[in-house]
Amino acid sequence: MTSKLGAGAQGHLAMLAFSALVAGSFSLGVQAANAIEPAALNAARFALAAAVIGAVVAATGKARAVHWQAPWRYLVLGGLFGIYFVLMFEGLKTAPAVSAAAVFTLTPVLAGGFGWLLLRQVTTPRMALALAIGAVGAVWVIFRADIQALTRFEIGRGEAIYFVGCVSHALYTPMVRKLNRGEPAVVFTLGTLIAGCLLLTLYGWSDIMATDWLNLPAIVWITLVYIAVFASAATFVLLQFATLRLPSAKVMAYTYLTPSWVIVWEILLGNGVPGGMILIGVALTILALYLLLRDDSAVSGK
Image (tube, rainbow, N blue to C red; front, side, top):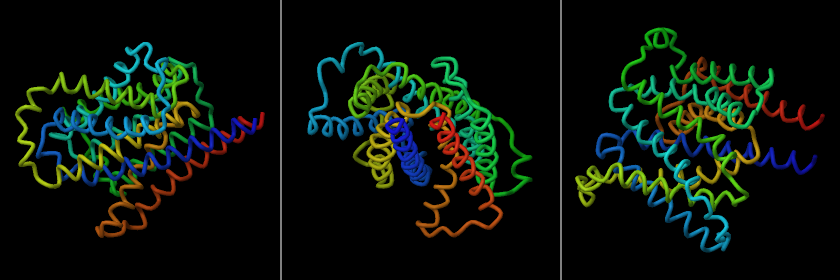
């Protein structure tokens, strides 16, 4: 019982770090989105991230021949995450950032559904309440506590494209747990990154060749290094680490914290402090996570 409780706490800490790192990619990504095609950017992202994780695996000596059996598993996982990243950038070509962020808050609910379909993970009433509160809090933060902005929300082509990407992201989470055969998180991540890089390179070869890599703006390279090392390599490990210890719905519930972390990033970058009304949404997302933690305690105490 103690070991299970410890594993759950480790999973929650991993996802806390995950949400903070992902939030940083939004602040940088917006500045580089229009300077490079999504397929080219993400192929480079996966390649750099694979190099980083590969060095870690080589240094730790954790990889064994048995870890590379059934390589189709890595193609499935790499494909799912590759689809998400490409469709995210494709959707942002026409979808406003606020609308896209609102679509992203559907991911935890989708992950809960896939978790039940693939793993028969049941969402308890307390967890369902937490997801609902977290969703309300996240939307409140995303729309800056502006009711009129919320009522003007309309689903456009970009939002629809990004929604498909979010479905892929939500499916990825339970698939990690279903396809893992005991491989360490860092090794499983490396396989996923290599497969994703291969698939994205094949898909976006023309965009890669058409990109003037030597003359890209500095912000693109800064963004690429950040999203590859911190928002890809590190978060891939954290996500796979957590999904082996927590139900899919709880893992994806941490996406509700991303808007709040974005506010923290904005404050650190000197872009001002949000108003008190927005902080209500932040408080709701924290309440949602508290309920999830209480749910863990209730389950483990049985």
